[in-house]
Amino acid sequence: MLGIHNDLVHHDHIDLYTGVIDLPEGATAGYSVRRISSTYFGPGVRVINSSNVEKDIKFLPNGNLDTVTMEAHCGSGDGHVTQWYDQTGLQNHLIQSTAGLRPKIVSSGTTITNPDNGKVAIEFAGDTMKKESISLYPTSVSGLAQCVVVAKADSGISSVNNLFTIGDINGNELLSSRIVPTGVEAAWKIRSVQNRDYISSDFFDSYVHIVELFVAILRAGSNGDTNNLSSTVGSTSTADDIYMGGDESGSNLFNGFIQEFIMYNVGDTLSESVIEDISDTMNSYYGVY
Image 1 (cartoon, rainbow, N blue to C red):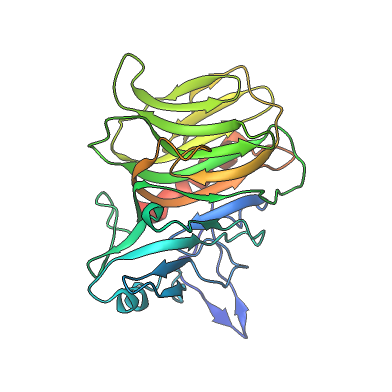
Image 2: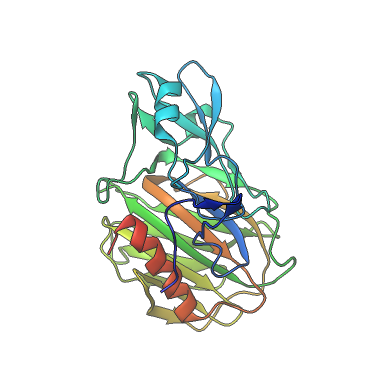
């Protein structure tokens, strides 16, 4: 299992903190409600309060989000996220400039948490955030996207909800994870431009979702297991956009809680064991499984 220290330890001004995206290196995007990188020292989220004042919320020495400062900023009102900062250093920050589409992180003066694990969470209630024209690591790698996400869907979902969507350079859906709550195909689904398949999981529990797209394969799983399903058709497109909580058209908006998202598109795809270790390391903090 990958190691992670949940405390920032300073000795002679050397930061010994190890985050989940440090092992392995090569993430294209990394968003979280905690610090997940030893080389990132910026804020976690930018929050706007009911007086329309925005403030960057940083991390505490233990790596957790500074919820005391965030709640003081919001007072007795709500706080919504205008920017979710990318911790990879590639500046792939998720933004939402439309007030009615911003997810919430403080409700009536209290930090929102995932009811399954009690950890800070961003609540999407028909909201979405996006980053267009992402910077890839490495650049111009085609047909590769490996995503690991900690999320929980609301139990009241009655229509298709996209947890996330990766768009390609041609404006198409390269890869997505979505919940289809009703009908003969009711399931968590993953889709690429050429194929679709299903994740074997309960709809509304918290899960660490593992969604992977390669040139020759589309694969998904959850909770430390990449082998729940696979398909033999992937994609040769190049990732260009990230949509969190929706699709490229701004439809199928997500209702639920998102706590962490990491995307890789390294030239040499990460092995199943490495991806499973990333899932296990996330779980050591969030206690999902």
